[in-house]
Image 1: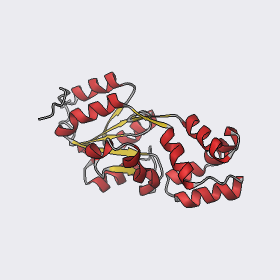
Image 2: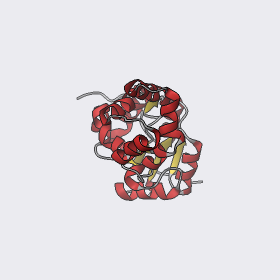
Image 3: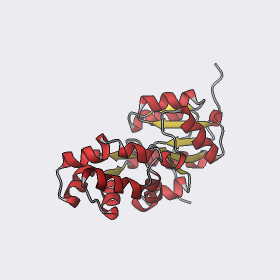
Image 4: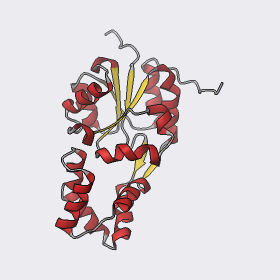
Amino acid sequence: MTPRPRPKLVVFDLDDVLVEYQRERRVDALARAVGAAPATVLDALFKSGLETKNDRGELGLEDYLDAVRRRHGLDIPLDAFIDARRQSMRLRRDVLGLAERIAPQTTLALFTNNGQWLGRQLPKFFPELRPLFGTRMITTGQLGLTKPDPQAFYACLSTLGYSPASALMIDDRTENVGGAQSAGLDAIHYTSPPQLAGELLRRGFDLEPVHAP
């Protein structure tokens, strides 16, 4: 089999690839903000399906919080909701370092199953992302389609202006890797920074450290 050329576009997932995401930390922060039990917050946001609807773009953030208020009696301030998401994430600097090393050799993008609001907040949460990803931080809420649906990957690439054959997706969920492959992308199932480095090397990337001029 003829190996693929080095990808022209490398798309990173956000949660549990570029960042460590702990939903429990987010739920606890929201529970403290509204004086409720964590189980109540968990039910209102996640078990209710409202978070998923926000991820799919069916509910904007204000409508999401309004539904939580009306259906579950939790009045979550907008700022507290956003800050709880910030508190739930830790940047994986080893993965970011790999992104920095391949950035001169390809175009980088981010594609995440999250509401559109998070895409707007990411540069504030992690200023380190902007120099690498620019405005190429796509959320499923923006597209109205979620991974692993192959149509979500088509829509993401159409927004970015790349073909499936030219793109590589890096994701921690096997179902999302399968969806990307079904859409014609190359895909890596992320498990650790050393494993990701090996996969990038096999695709022709030079991973020598980037030196400032």
